[in-house]
Image 1 (cartoon, rainbow, N blue to C red):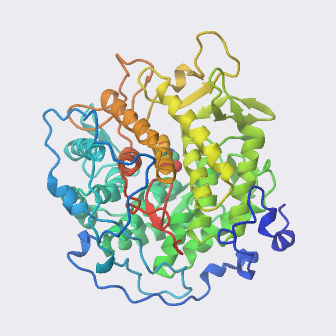
Image 2: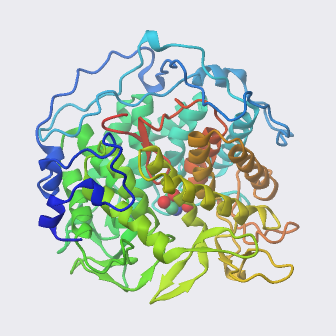
Image 3: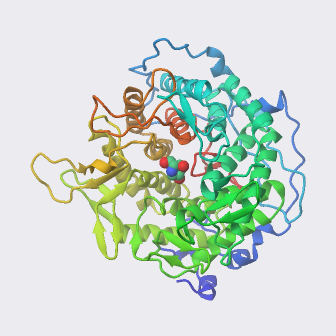
Amino acid sequence: LTNKSLDDQRTEQEIPGVKLANPAVLPAPQKADANRGDYPELSPQKQPNPPHVRRGPSNLQIKAPRRDTRLKTRHSTVRAVEEPVQTDNEEKTEKSIISWRGAVIEPDQNTEPPSSKIKEPEKPSSVEAEDQKEPVPINERQLAVIEAFRHAWRGYKDFAWGHDELKPLSKSYSEWFGLGLTLIDALDTMWILGLKEEFEEARKWVANDLVFDKNVDVNLFESTIRILGGLLSTYHLSGDSLFLEKAKDIGNRLMPAFKTPSKIPYSDVNIGRGTAHPPRWTSDSTVAEVTSIQLEFRELSRLTGDEKFQKAVDEVMKHIHTLSGKNDGLVPMFINTNSGQFTHLGVYTLGARADSYYEYLLKQWIQGGKKENELLEDYMRAIEGVKKHLLQRSAPRKLTFVGELAHGHFSAKMDHLVCFLPGTLALGAHNGLDADHMKLAEALIETCYQMYAQVETGLSPEIVHFNLHAQKGQKDVEIKPADRHNLLRPETVESLFYMYRFTGDKKYQDWGWEILQNFNKYTRVPTGGYTSINNVQNPSNPEPRDKMESFFLGETLKYMFLLFSDDIDLINLDKYIFNTEAHPLPIWVPA
Ligand code: DMJ
């Protein structure tokens, strides 16, 4: 169904998997939705309330906690940690950290869609006194995450300060964009973990040393999710306008990417020169990249009142909504920036190059107040496509997994990247979508956990192949030599976090705890930092790669900390939506 006039007449009950019984989730189509191409979200809106007066230093605003914030779990008491991680020769976590955070972070209360007029930036507001209650105390497992973060940060600070990534073994750094990627990616994690001193020091670097006026090529997607997303979320959490100013600067500098014949953006932008281009060998862009920058640019429009950011990214979604070449909602991996057509047709995956397309369909729909029906429709159809073409069960344990389809042939290959899916499915179900999605999420997170548990180090490889037929002594998971690395990726702990939030089942916390311990055992570098490893199958020599990816601090440890928390208001999922780099942005019309 790609015909717009037909779409306009559709009712939400025609969207596969959507139940009629839940009108709050699926409002009847409105005129504005039917004409999404006219950017109704950008039409003049009620002006936001004047900014609240903030208490305390603006860069470290602490917001009061709210009542009834504890997660209701299946077990009555919160168990203390059984096995604290090694902290030899490392400073003990200070009590003051806990009281500093005590913070329950509330999103900007003035979450209106963007106005078409340029206006003063909106300010996040603080929680009023009547909402105050005792903060939910930080538990032992969360303290272990804080300890891990500080260890990672110490390595970054000592050997890579202001550079993109730490090389913890050679005690040096690597540059990708030369923009302090790890520092920016980690800002909101420090805020959430309550690391006040570290946050203040990093803020100083952003204020004094972060300069975007540089003759450097950056990848549009990576810099949007990590830098723009990181700055926007830090602005919302801290209320510090420095981060919004920096976000505006980088947002403007990325805009030349959209100047293409098709308006499908190029992959690379020179943020100093204002020029953009595709990779040297092709004029294609990656589908996941051009469709996973929307949450950030839409939020930038809302904050600045400048519609150009949202217009550019909405155009991409609108175009892809009507584009042919999909297979029951599943998209190919490449799209041409000249013609605007999908290329390399016939290959469908939920892994690399397509993954976050699916994630952002749902998340944009939630961000915008569940009104943009085309996004929901594309999401629901895609999940039906996954069920029809990509789901299989392994042998011997009958684990449900998501494989790939190449020109009609099914491959039992699953990237670790696909493990974002259980969390996304659970988030959809939480927002009123089909209860089957939750069932599928439960099955898939078990599989993602087994991708760790069935491996010698207890850490997942980058890619697994599932066995489809039982043979004596065989595990479900097979690993090819080229795929046995682990980059400290977040997707499984991300999904564990969602699953725990929505079910209260403590097994998800226990699984995450096992994973944290294995990261500590096999990837921790004694002199500071954590490293990617080359061989998850060799516990006696996992072959450290000498690189700590920025998402280990931006995502993996943040999701661990949130997973171990029983405080649903520690980034309340009815008020915030996480971008694909774990940076929380406000939902415009909170539930
Ligand atoms: C991150 O940059 C993001 O999570 C992205 O969506 C996928 N790749 C890495 C983490 O694995």
